[in-house]
Length: 383
Ligand code: ATP
Ligand code: MG
Image 1 (cartoon, rainbow, N blue to C red):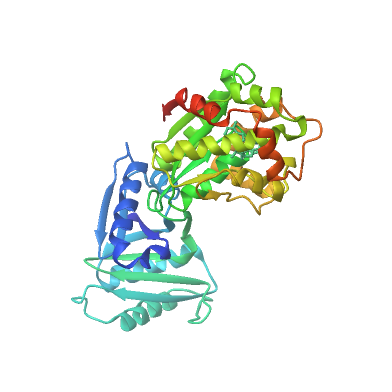
Image 2: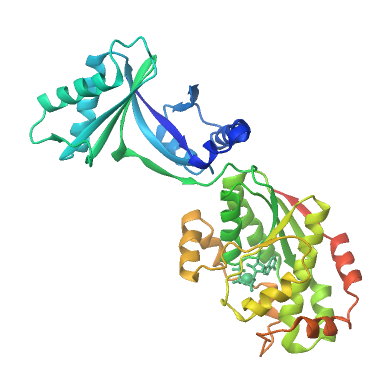
């Protein structure tokens, strides 16, 4: 008798038809990556993914964070005979101690001498014989005891089910360039895209000496936390000082922020293009700050040449903060290092910028040259 975990992956993967195999393959690779350095045994028995380890707690902790896994069941493996199964089922019931229960059996091993219905009935009867104040309820049971009969038998109850992160296997849904600042929102936005299987690269706009080396380190640290979920991430650090200076010197003060946003968007798109990344992601949320009005979003999207995803667009700050805490980025995000947007904040930023006015203001700048120079001096950090 030993304890194992049974991995249940997201039902969306089942719907992938011919692609199902490649989704499973990716998921498997990602699970193995997550378990690197641990001793474990992995087995697949007709779509049943089972993991055994001496260090099951650590295995659970790591596997439940792998995107695409919906839940984990803690199962007990016993010999495939009725006595052993009944005894383990009874032990499990006693531990959970529900008022009602139901036994569900799946028999994959056709050599087992009775069918699923009979096995469920026999195990149920054994449990009833050995318990007080316990009833069967087939419609709304307090606990379902699952019995799977294969070469060995596996017993588990729904009450011990462990919720995992869900989503889709990482790297199964294209690529995005995440605009990663040191704030609370953008790491959460990146996490949410990665959770849906989208491969992340990150770009950070750095304005030395106005933003310090420590601010850059903080962004690196945030990318490293995301890496815990995704594996290797490329972080592009784009020098942004010259662009900001040019804007400050040549454009109307109330348009600084929004013109700066447009430059960030142009650069993110160009970097994406260069690296064959189809989309851009930001941590914007509608109405959160002056630059995140509908008009502001329209103005920055106008310079984009590919889809811009804003997974937080309809979320409240508090909910975003909750996710940041859950995924472990919050504590780093709230470290008080300056970011390039807080340094040059206009006193009265335009909240309803009109694209044609912005274009007019940008005529004072050599936009292409500024973008080209920033790209030429971009640093790639492989994390
Ligand atoms: P965050 O908490 O993600 O910094 P925020 O609420 O502070 O967001 P803004 O500063 O207006 O909002 O930035 C909006 C979005 O623009 C960010 O979520 C991020 O995607 C991007 N962004 C802002 N500053 C930078 C930067 N220096 N480098 C990269 N991306 C940035
Ligand atoms: Mg910010």
